[in-house]
Length: 241
Image 1 (cartoon, rainbow, N blue to C red):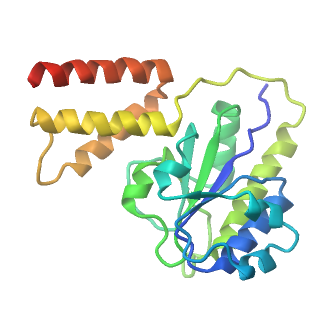
Image 2 (cartoon, helix red, strand yellow; image 1 turned 90 degrees about the horizontal axis):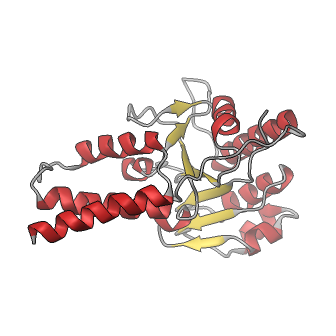
């Protein structure tokens, strides 16, 4: 059997309207969640946010302020981008229900982040590259644009339903997946080494690096494995200097 999911972190990237931050905080609290991270919000703290939070002020007061997405998810072992856009990228795309089933089956005991983008433009492709998978909320194909706080509410609700479904289940050992901060450091070092040995196309390195990221993401590297790989890269760097 599977144990209930660990409480996720909700990450909002460059939210433009403080009311959406407050409404999102309310969405968290109604579903028993409290971990909120804000990446470069345009207006926060703001009285409008606290007014819209409607009893969830402590979620806003304890919100983590971050300079970029990498900082917000550095302590997370699973990062999920929530987007309405059809990007045709290499990251696996799941519905909210499929996402919770996958997390319950394989990642119940790991720290997960659900990342939401800007109200107008969502997440950039570069931000999606930092996600292990993508979640798309099914909606009217002729008008699929959800309000940010509504999208947060749906994801939090699906998480809450998953807790009810798996409440009381016996615990299963979770994989010791390395946190995103360690993995991102490895990717940056790998990029530098591949550039140094002229493996990457200097004019367009991103497509290949995107595939390399997906390759390693599927392996679910541990911290010990990251250290081994970074040690190998360090030795390669010394040998070519």
